[in-house]
Image (cartoon, rainbow over the protein chains, first blue to last red):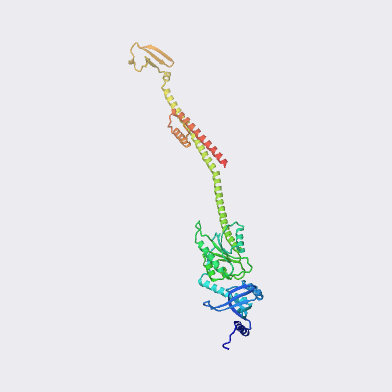
Length: 418
Length: 63
């Protein structure tokens, strides 16, 4: 017996017999998928169990799902969990053992319980949320504010994706003619590379946002992480701790529009604002800027009103003054006229008085003079005697024989002194 | 006549003449001459007032 040799096939057939005999049933097994590939309609998987703290594999096995079963299980799993079966997921599989002498050992999958995977994902999400809260970063984005003029937008999205197209169209066609500057940072938005790809895009935005533009401004106001279009969306790539940490700690406000109506992803929870679709993200930005525009227009309106009121007040004052000035000026003129008239009327009075007093004076003098008129004396009987034109006041002025002339009232006569 | 005399100067001169007339400060010979001057001054002032009044009315109507 000890010396008997077996061919490998013989020995393998013995293993097969043993397995079929001792493991005849189907079992529900919990495992993590380390590989999952479809080939020829069949699905080939690698199952692994890892030690919880160190993550080192402590069990490993192949698993297969034949085409007939896979055709049913694949859409079922995706419908319930909103994501395809892929490496990294924890799964609950119904399996039976199969050992083939030529192909070796394999678990054959006959059923899958997607709720287990959902539960596991939920547990992982809760764990990530707990950790983010513990780090104190969970609400950091909520403390940021969209700048008033939120126009320079860094977009993380897949180039050429429908959602990004919707976003661009919505912004460009906004009815208010608002202008937005959009810079795309392309990233893979589906599958296992989401985390790494989006983080790389965030880092690139961060680097660029540290460099000021030519007019001394930071180049971006907001970051939008966009994905959309697809009916069922695999969001598991967005539910990782590293990505959530990057988003939570990002210095610019981040708007997520990653297109799904189910539970929020962790990214949505930590972002500044979450909206359902890229189109909704565009609407939000338009609305925000429109509100700012309204504020400006309102202020403009108030300034215009205030100024025109002021102008009208001044204009009224001017009109009043305008009508007042001629009145005042004419009054002044009228006063001046009056003054001139008064002055003028004083002149004849003054002259009249002056002339009258002079006349009076003259008359007095005349009267006085009259009393001295020799004719007056002559008429009273007096006479005047002259000798050679001189009036004789003393007889001694004369000697005998002088010819004298005497004037009386009614004429004169000559005589000779005896 | 002198070159363009200011209204205020003319008025002041007129007032002086009237005051002196009333105070009998002119002799009779000067009187006629001063009266003539006074009448010229009155005409000058009135002309200025009339012209100014017309100007003001014209400006007021312009608006």
